[in-house]
Every structure is written in structure tokens, then in C-alpha cells.
Amino acid sequence: MSDSVPCPDCGASAERHGVQVLLDDDSLRWDTEVVCRGCGSALAVCGTEVPGGMRERLLAEHGRAELRLGPSADRVAVMRVLRRTLGLGLGEARDVLEQGYGGTLPETELLARRLRDAGVDAVAVRGVAGSGSVRRER
Ligand SMILES: [Zn+2]
Image 1 (cartoon, rainbow, N blue to C red):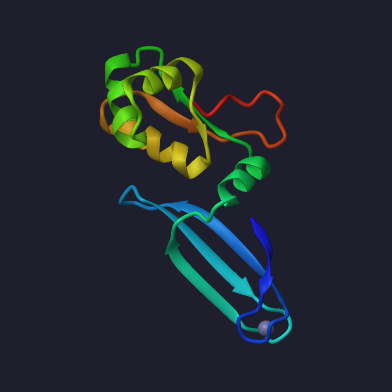
Image 2: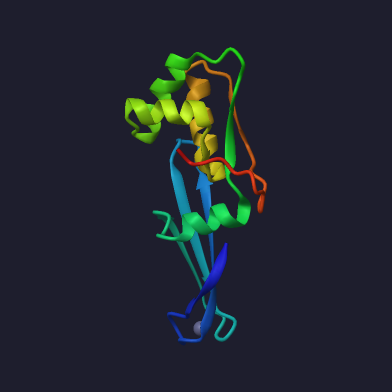
């Protein structure tokens, strides 16, 4: 994921790269690096929230990752994890259960990890960019 921002040192157009990573402690982090070809300045910013609009671009560029549940997944346990992890209400969690969850890969991996912790067979499957049959997020 990259775009252009003014270089903080010389003001020329610098390239900004951002990446969303899932850390071992189950937190999602957004790392950004700004590299200027004009003056060679490089700036790394770690541990920020995903900036507005970036998440949609990530989803558009990489596609939505899908959450796949095992055939014997316990619906009650899944609902509980969905509600706790995503902060959803009962009805919303049921919609996700029926229609599927789609988010960025790190987000979906986090959800799958939480589900496995709760004893549910779940995996995150990488989305296909440009696929016409993306699932609704909720
Ligand atoms: Zn510069």
C-alpha cells in the first residue's frame, strides 16, 4: 500500500508505504514508512491506527480475507467470540455467522486466532483481489 505525501524535510513528493500487521500479542498495528527520493530522507512511524480511507484501499487492492469455520463449529462459541472481538450486538453477530466475515487479512487472522483459542476450528483465507464475489462485511 503506497501513496505520495510531501517530504517532511525538503517538501518534494515522497513515497509512503503502509502495512497492517498482526502482532503476537493479538493487536493490530499500522506501520508507515516515508521515503524521499529527492533528499534521501526516510521516516518510519510504527504503532498507529489504520488511517481513514486506507483500510478501504487495502481491501480494494488485496481483496477481503474470508473467515472459514469448521463443519462442527460451535455456533454459540463463535457468536461469543464475534461479539467480544468485534464489539457486535447479538443480531449483528448472527448476520456475520450467516453471511460470513470479510476484512483485511490481519483482521481476519486475529478473529480466527481468537476462535481457535475458544476451541473453534477456524482459519483465515486470503481474499482474491478484484474478485466480483466478495462477501459483505456484515
Ligand atoms: Zn525530501
